[in-house]
Image (cartoon, rainbow, N blue to C red):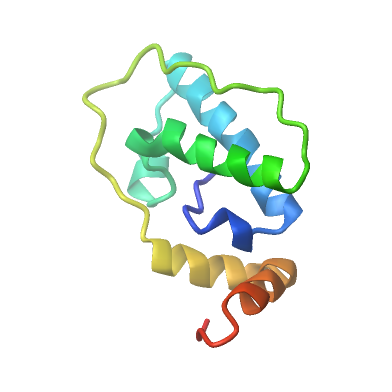
Amino acid sequence: MRQWMVDPKVMCRKHLLGEHVEHHMFVGTINKRISIDGYLRDNLLEPASLHDRHDELVAEMKARGYNHQSPLPTVMWWPREIPETKIDKESALKELLRRCPECAARYATLYPASPK
C-alpha cells in the first residue's frame, strides 16, 4: 500500500484505482489498530492527507467517467497524534514513471516540455 501523491491526471487507470482502494485499506488498517509505522518510515503514507487525497482521486475518477460509490470511512482512532510525515512527491513521480509505461505516456502528453 502507498500514496503516490502525484497529479492524479498523470496516473493510468490501474494506478489511479489502486491508490484509491489503498486509501480505504489504510483507513481500515488504522481503525483496526494495526501499526502503520512501516508505511510512515518508508515514506509511503501521509496520514493527515488521507481524506483530501481521496477526494482528489475521486475527482479524477469522475472526470474520466468512472462510477465512484465508496466514500472514505472516518478514521476512528489514531495510534498517536497524526504524524507530520510528507511524501517526497518528486521522488514518487520518478518512481511511478519508471515503473509504469502508461503513466509515463500520460505524463509526457500532459507535460511535453518537462523532464522526467
